[in-house]
Figure 1: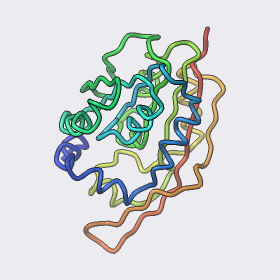
Figure 2: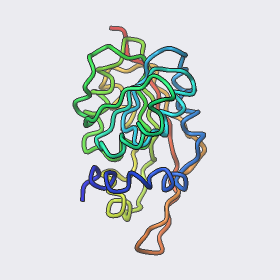
Figure 3: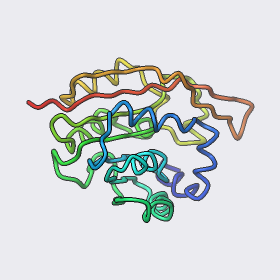
Figure 4: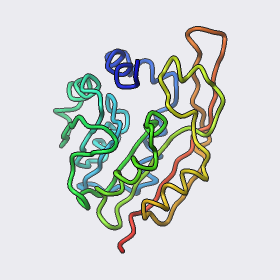
Length: 210
C-alpha cells in the first residue's frame, strides 16, 4: 500500500486518529509563523481533512486545499464548504494546479515526510508563491521509528534541519527560520509494543523578490 491508498482508506477516521498525534496549537503556530493577514490567499498542501485549513478559515483567509487523496478532500469539503472561501484541488506535490507567483502563503503540516523528493516539492510550493510570499512547513525531526514506514507509510523518518535549510535555499527562499515547536508527535505501533515520541520543527521562509 502507498501513502495515497492509506489516506484514502482512513479518511473518515483521520480526524480522530490525528488528535492523538499532536495538538491543535501547531496550526496556530503555523499561521503565526507566516504572519497571515485577513483576506489574502493561502494554500494548504497535503491538507487532508482540513487541520490547517480550519485555522486559515477562522482567520478569514481565502484557502486552496490541495491533497492527493480525493477521499480526504471530500471529508474536508463536508466540514468547511459553507464556512468560508475555499477551493479543493486534487493533485500531487510536484504539479500544483496553480499559476506561478499567485498566492500569498503556502502551508504544509506533516506532509513532507510522505513525499519521495522533498526538495522538488519545496521548489514547487515556492513556485506558486508571490515574491515576498511565505512558506511554512511543520514536520518531524530525524528519528529511528521504523514501524512508521510500514504502518503509516512514511517515506522519510523525519528530517535533519540542515537538509530543510538546504532545500529552502535551493528554492530561492530567504529569511529562513527553523525552530523547535516544543512539542512531540506521539504514536503507538499497532503491531508491536513500540511507541514513538518525535520532536516537531517549524520551518518558515520568504520567496525572494529577485
